[in-house]
Length: 133
Image (cartoon, rainbow, N blue to C red; front, side):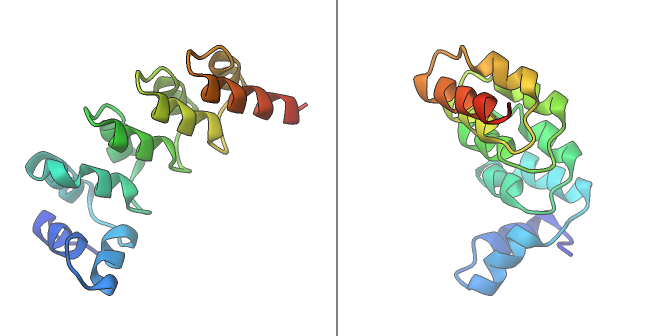
């Protein structure tokens, strides 16, 4: 378990594969994740990348100013239908594309994305809707 924001930063930016691997797979308490987000903005993407990051932290990161962070959030399996709905309206096309590709995206969200301004998002949403019939 990752015990502090400093430990997460040390692990993530280490040159040792076993250490940065721990940063992507070991859990931390929500307070640790919040501290990383607040004190180390350059690491927000890597918080979202962590396989064990709790939903409450993903909800915070879903509103991040960096579209790369929001896109990583949109690709996480554990997202709720409400969070997927929110991310489907994101101004960044890469976030909306990640939602369209999400394994658990609700049908009504795919129907919404079927009329997206970006052609690739529209195509993915249409293909997924056609295959679900």
